[in-house]
Image (cartoon, rainbow, N blue to C red; front, side, top):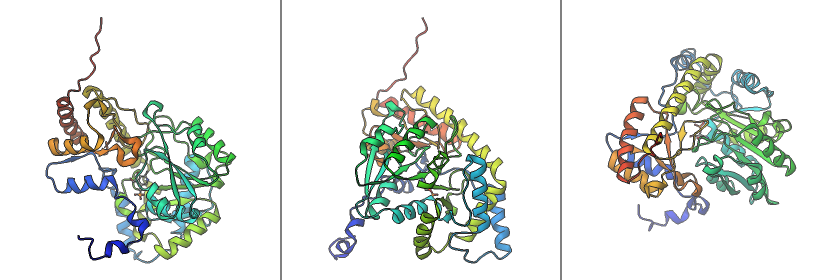
Length: 401
Ligand code: PLP
C-alpha cells in the first residue's frame, strides 16, 4: 500500500519503529509454496489429546458459555496451584496470586506493562523468543540484550547478567528451556543468577513455557529458589506441553500486588480468557499428565534423531536440553543465516528460521523445530543433507587405526 495518503505517518512512532518479526517473512513464503516441509513453526505437530477436547465439548453442552471472573475460573487456578506444588514445591494462593491469561503471550505483555515505567531497562538473554524486546519497547521500557554463545552452551551466567546492570535495570527476563537454542540452565547457574537478582533488587519475569519439555536433568522453577518467589512473575501455559497452541490459554503466578496490577490491565483489555479454553485447561491438568509425558518422550526420540542427522551432515549442533528446537551452526556452508534459510526453502522446500530472527547473536545458526513427525523429519533431513553437500560441507570421518 502507498504511504502517500499520510496514514502511515499517523501511526504511533513507537509502533512504526518496531520491525516485523523475522519469523513472519518465512511463514508468508511457506504459505505461497507447495510441498514444503516446515521445521519453522514452534508448534507441536500433535492435535490436542482427545479427552481435553472432549472436556471442552461437554462443558459447552452443559452451557459453559459465559464470562468467567477476570482472574479466571477458581477451580482452574486451584489446579494450577496444586500442579506447581507437586512439580516444584512452590506454594501460591489461588485467590490472590494466580491470573489466567490468553497464553503466555498475554501474561508477558501484562507483566511488562504492569511493571515497566518509561526508561526502565529490561535484561533479555539473546538469542531468545521474538516477543520480549518489542513488548518491552511498546511499554516504554528499554530492552537490554545479553548475548550468550554456543561456546558456553548458550547458558546465561551471573557474570553476563551482572555486566549489563545499570541504575535503570528493573527486570531480568528468563526463558529456560530456551527458544530458539533449546538451552537449559543448571541449578547452579540459577542460584548464582538469583544472588545477582537479590543483590541488585531486581524483579524476574520467568517464562517457563517449556518446563515440561526438559530432557537433560530436571527443570528448576525459578520462584522455587529460596527468596525468589516474591520477586518473580512466573509465566506458563498449555500451548507446548499439552499441544494447545490454538486454545490461547496460560497463566501468571506472582505476589498479590503484581497480580492485582496485571489483572487491572487484563480486565480492561481482555476481560477474561475464553471459558472454553479454561475448561480444556482444567481437563489437561486433571487428567492430561500421561498423554503429556508420552508426547515429551516422542520429542526426545526426535531430538536424538535430529542430533544424529546433523552429525552425519557435518554440521555442528549444540545439544538442546529442552524445548523442541535444534540450533545448528551453519557457518561451514559459507552462507549467512537468512541466505541459508531462503535458499533451503527455494531449492529443497524445507523451512527453517534464520537464527538472527532471535537477535544478532543468532547469526550463523538456524532454528529447526523437531515438533514434526519422524517421517517429515527424515525427509526434511535428506533434503537438507543434499543442500549442505552442495555447499561443500562433508561429515568428519573417524579413522580407526
Ligand atoms: N514464550 C516462548 C518462549 C515461546 O516460544 C512462545 C511461543 O512460541 C510463547 C511464549 C507464546 O506462548 P503462548 O502460546 O502461550 O502465547
